[in-house]
Image (spheres, rainbow, N blue to C red):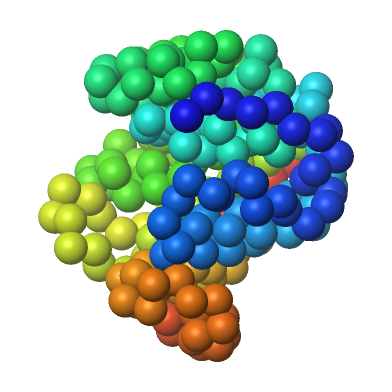
Amino acid sequence: MTAVAHDATVIARPMSTGLYTELPPAERYIHRTRDAALIDLLRRHDVETLPGRRILELGCGDGSLLRTLVYFGAEPGLLDAVDVDPKRVARAHTALPGISISIADMACLPYEDDSFDLAFAFTSFSSVVDLRARRRGAVEAMRVLRRGGLLVVYDFQANPTNSRVRPLPEREVRHMFESYPLDIQRVTLAPPLVRLLRGRRTLCRRLERLPFLRTHLLAAVRKDI
């Protein structure tokens, strides 16, 4: 799937369904609700549009979030991304040839201080099981942000079935970013439950009202110092 440019004001309007048409129903529900929460969070922090902003993704994988950001108006020439897995970086390069994607560890970023307006870490910190490396990644993320810049973290808090990753609880986020203003909320109905319900919107929406069934956190960290 290739990146599709969209109207620059799309982030300020309700989302189109076009971004999710290739996903199965359960994954479509998970992505739509996650992205709706993301847009609300960005707008609360005065990020109404993405064009003209220099943006970094930490741990981009195959480029799924990068495609979403481009759809919401981010300019490929102003997007950078890193991942430690060369194979995933290669796949992201193939799908998104106009974006600068590097093989790099988020704990040692190849960028100068104050380089980016926005940074995103989506299920990235949970992939770093060593707590010291996680904290170095947090320091690096804030280092490369400009003053007034925003880091957005989306990650799971519950124990996953994958033993190669480690959950990121809210208390740890608060500790990692204790020097910065934080905006944290619980989001995303437990994905196994969404898949069991096959993404049926009415049923999922009802269950999503129960905070203990939301397994992920979405946090904005503002660099105001």
